[in-house]
Amino acid sequence: MVAEEKTRDEIDDDIYDEEEDTQKDKYLTFHLAGEDYGIEIRHVTEIIGIQRITEVPDMPEFVKGVINLRGKVIPVMDVRIRFKLPFREYDERTCIVVVDINNTTIGLVVDQVREVADIPEDQVEAPPKSGKKTSSRFIQGLGKKDDEVKIILNVDQLLYDEELEKIGAAIK
Image (cartoon, rainbow, N blue to C red; front, side, top):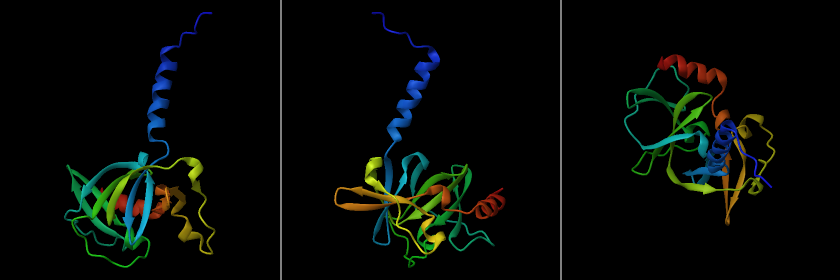
């Protein structure tokens, strides 16, 4: 029996699928106010240490300002403030996780980056139902890893469309 030959496009598709598979079920986990959170690794561009943030007037309270990242102006959101958690001074463990949200690059200030964790799809449960629709919109699910639970964030929902527009207009 002769093995079927694959076309160049089929081989390219296989390679693309393998690249996609390498990021499947992988989450960058970080610590925030005593809890562990995770975001899909596919959204993460890079992780940098905390640096000087330039304040921009008329921004939402949780947008701390902007940074200059290799010549590109990046807005920075403090995730603690976004989630209405108690304020904490930045320290040597505080990081900025640079992510892509709906084609907008933004930095997320977190207390401490933990690891890249494998959390299989069958270990992620739907978020609990909440009386407030807006509070649960940030949560994509609850990931079980060993004996711990990681709150998986829905990165695309961290900012409302109008907030993204306002931030985009301020940095252009």
